[in-house]
Image 1 (cartoon, rainbow, N blue to C red):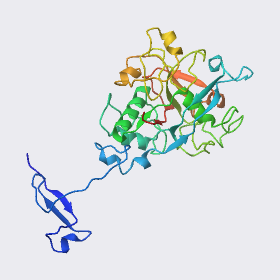
Image 2 (image 1 turned 180 degrees about the horizontal axis):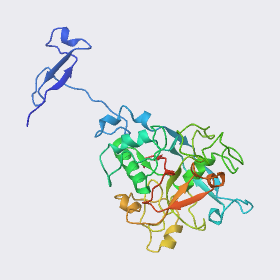
Image 3 (image 1 turned 90 degrees about the horizontal axis):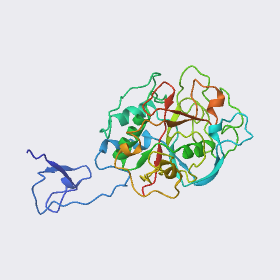
Image 4 (image 1 turned 90 degrees about the vertical axis):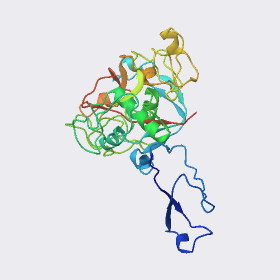
Length: 329
């Protein structure tokens, strides 16, 4: 095996002043030792992967994250809401820890960069979208594709990226509001892309109070949870509700008891991480949650409390996602 030369910098006691200049460069074989060669260490943040160095220089510009504060909110719709569907009830109190969420839906430019990273579970089409544009949201991606994106990004950065739970999504969308939309009780072409002709570049419309754009319209956004016909028995701690596995938080998973009904209702934090995305539903075809409405939908489907679903392997021109970043525990 050929040994390539390695750089040495800074000069030494045995050299003349010229190699000791700030810009001075010398080389040495990596298997040689000498009385004039030493080293010093550098300590990097945990968020920087030692395996994928190309990500170091551009990660902070690749995905812009917003800090979502810990808190509580009433999730769903009140019985008095005439626009509400039965699956948005009963309204219930949810308490959540702090987390980070993507400022916008994932764009096509962001998608392409992460699609270049090594595969974790499945291959990714680097250019899946129907409506082309670097700053438009990526669409025509399945729930499985979105999970693969999060897995690659996590592996490349050492951080924990995932899809938001449904509770995290609605909490972040509302940003402390109790109105139909996070901007009031109505939306128009001035503040959301609904009843449109195509997707629009992300960030075109005003952000909500916490700095998140495009929470209403543009593209539906995949969430981690499986679909349930109502909130009866839903978690109250911000966890994902996944009946086939039991309830697990969006940072950790627990296989739970054998009975799905009791599993979906267990409380408390989960304790073990899944070994792969198979544990998160790769073997399942249960419908997954979609939130936020899309460019093709009318305003009622873009409400903060509105819920929709589709098969996890489905994709179309109105479905995308945004990432959630959780603290390592």
